Length: 210
Length: 138
Image (cartoon, rainbow over all chains, first blue to last red):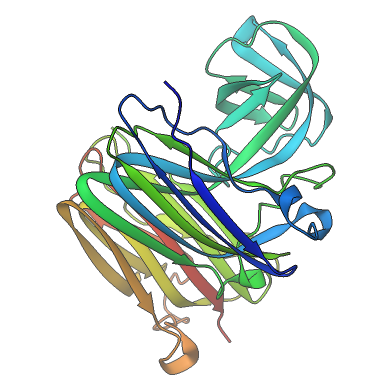
């Protein structure tokens, strides 16, 4: 089965924008993985450096599942991988950040199109994975930054509201220590886990060019 | 058993800051003075901070106390959840004196001004998700 097809309505005036997004799961539907909430390249005019900040968030969850909201590709480059000790070695592009797993919440890495769970970031040039990536040389890597995680509940509808406008920069931005933003895509993504038939997810997200 | 390793993200512009903090329990080990904001790591580091607002989501029958670190920690606020229910609790302190909750005594013994969290009564499956806005305290 496939994941549900969401309804997405985006308004953008060149400075500030809002997206209204909704998905409902049917029988046998799968979770959503890196589904685009805001496609920066689809905004007109496209913000400088593809950079957005999030002003506020309203997430309504009906069902016992988890949703991660993510910045897309906050760091990227090329790596070598080895079966030995399931290690990844940095080659070029954005270096790894040893704090990634707990701050800001970069727990997976996509290597050559395959998503792997990060066990540990051992140094700025070495990551250990939870599974074997095989032996690969000079392949592309990207990481997404999870900026919020919400969990729902069976037989209950929860609505979570987060207002970031009182914080620094009057909005939430990606962790800028992770990326030079060179070539980074500032899309906002959504991934669910544990969603089941009858569950619903609704997001109202206000953003602004950064 | 060990308390969960939280995900902690701090943004700081030299005057105002925000922290996103999330933990999910796999057992019943509580936090005792778990660091939420270590002000010595902020650049530039303030002498102390005040809390402008707290947005906390509790999933489970958890007690959560936020404190400023000192030999005798200084209470900021307390929150309590409930079994089988998720609560989002919001506190905005900006309309009060000092536009925020300031430490009771920055000259107290052992005062570091760090923001700590202590929990009680956690159980496996419980979650805590907080977004806290703070500011340099003059």
